Amino acid sequence: MYGDSRICVPARESFKRDMVQIRGGTNEHFVVGELDIKKLRDFQKRAYVEEGEFKPLPDGFEMGAHRRK
Image (cartoon, rainbow, N blue to C red; front, side, top):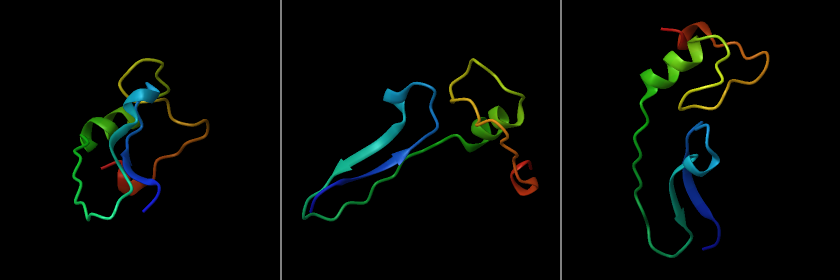
């Protein structure tokens, strides 16, 4: 009844981070959002970048081998 649910993305600008947000209530909802995973993975594979659609990776971030594919 209270609170909210959301789909968040790692966007550089904070106002773009909530792709979808719905507030509490008594009705059931089905929410769908689309994120370009290939674009995100390509960004994450590069070395530290100041520019771009996504926020920078944390210091020391190491992507798992299964995600590099």
